Image (tube, rainbow, N blue to C red; front, side):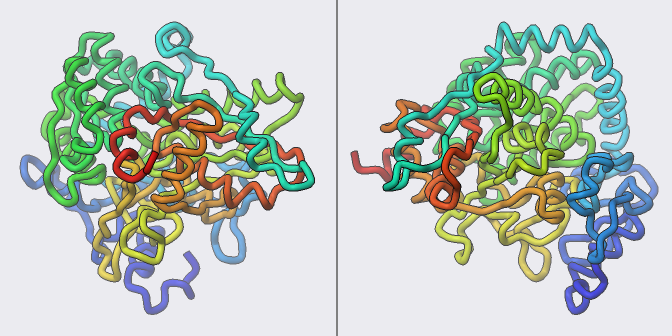
Length: 476
């Protein structure tokens, strides 16, 4: 952060100082140094919810520009993340000492298994025969026709059909890989958080497949609007624990899952469902989802002999978007566009557009953009889509926004509902409300694109789970 930008802004001063000394800015914008003594019991639980001393003792190396940020031109030679688990200044490990051993063990296991042919063979086999990969890259003919201009020109719309995966979303890519990793670590108990329920269903599914105990934390409000997925998780043998604190949504479910992990870290693996949280989770979840982008590159080459021109995906924490984007980050001729939830509008206090309206802070163990007030307190988000209803975002998305490599915009609840109906009727595909945010952005994007531009939208999930919610708003 440039020194000038920190003047008069206590949060900015704290973040700038943290970049120098490796400490996390507190939610009040003041620096808090963690005790060197290990925390136990209630103290550990409280610490897991608040920023603690980061592992990194120095700022990560980035390609310098005049404003002190990394440049797009430097991406090809820049480790993402670096040795400290940082993407530029974002990321890191802002956690209590209680979790440090588990995170270090997890990172070591991940790197060891990344080069393990036996592990990769087992994972590939499950993804193919159980999950159903590869997923199609589908030409949306009628949607393409819908966006043609009066002169017959317009972009070509393709859907990457992650909704056709077993359990109906991209989430199972990560769940399968992390359960296999947990088994290698000897963990017998699996916990996870979920918002829309898709990550919870995926985790419960894989735990059932391998006979592991599974506990899912879910906000009470999300349980009401995703009742079908709650039933599915319980049918699969998972214990679903309702979280009533805060707004009883995804942020609060994540906090409860972290509390559980702190208490039961010796025998429990936490399958974090997004590219958020402390290192190595943002890197690890991205790596387990990058199959989406790798397949897309191959399929595009097979279909038209080139690359997509534009990639489009919804962003809450950001796992489906990062899974699609990662393969193409170094391809400067491919536009990357993430779409957040504008809720009732970004100028209201009822939205989840973190990258659009947030500021840099610490949430759930990572330095990233956060929806927060002038005192650094988290602002409760809103979205009709439970999976986008989160006040933070992955650190790599934060980094890509700051260096200008990816573009981020937002659409409202109503725009997403309109797309939910439009795509159902034009393509016979009922998309998840999360996915509908990306599809809704085509209304803004397509009129600006030249003829023949190829747009790939990540169809991250199917909308069966959202029919009850949508029926309250749509007149059919």
